[in-house]
Length: 357
Image (tube, rainbow, N blue to C red; front, side, top):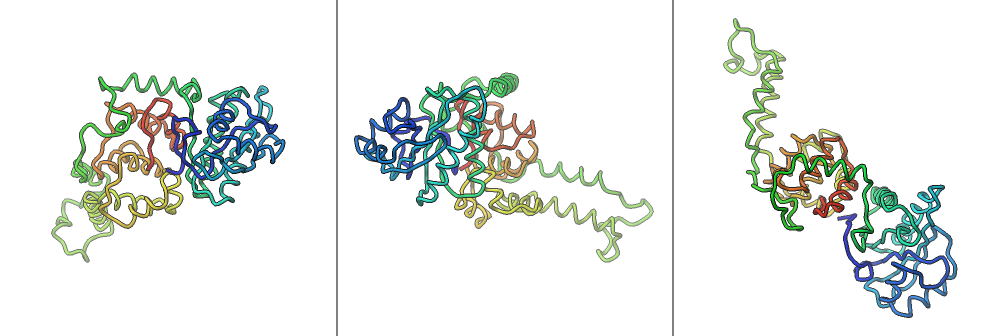
């Protein structure tokens, strides 16, 4: 997926570029800087010394030494001083590093959470700056970005959001045992790809439309050319409903994209999936997405809970209260919040699988 949050040692990540939260002077600092230099060997320090001093927010690239990367991008994060311009300085670190990676022809880049160690930047604010800056960049460019968290203490949601989500889970969770980490979004009981409640939709349309006058013959018994405008409208809407009942996931998705007047890039970027995967969905009416992809596309279209259940049901999935991951998704949809990156931040904080590809 274009943005992925993972828990690992950044020195072990394979990427075209690894970003180093560097010391402003050409010396080995603490934290990420120390780990990267230890893994890269002396060539990285020699390359860093050739660069010289760096200003806050500046980004430069060097060779990567023994690291599993083509480049190390060195950037200097701001020292937290109470909130006087530090957020924009931190955003500049991410933005300048991303632009540099793109100019170097990189297809993937791995970031640490910059400035959250000895520089004392509040972790929840640093996380929001990172996600928003990377998300804005990915709305305009194609690049695989990994945000690498070294340990659980390095990653923190705001207390308000964490508490609100936790309360929702406590109120609705029906499971007794959490599924394995790689199956947290798997449904408890797969549904048929065909919408099972389809017949219940039709009466709702019938009630909303005028009925034929009692003295006139039933519109079902009259030739189409003799039907009134309202009768033809009623037939057209009922026919649309019946046709939609048998739509596959892909067909329903593409219909809703067209109805909303959205462009494909707008949808797959909102869903945090790449263009190649979306092309497979568009070109194959019978394409079977993963549950994580199906949910992400529902979020990208800003569907209601009922609409989300219908769409993912066409791929054979359901939202279940036996899954904390599903409940987190349900929480955000019910709140009218469709920020895929914020949803994934929260899923990660609760140790749940992310949505997207």
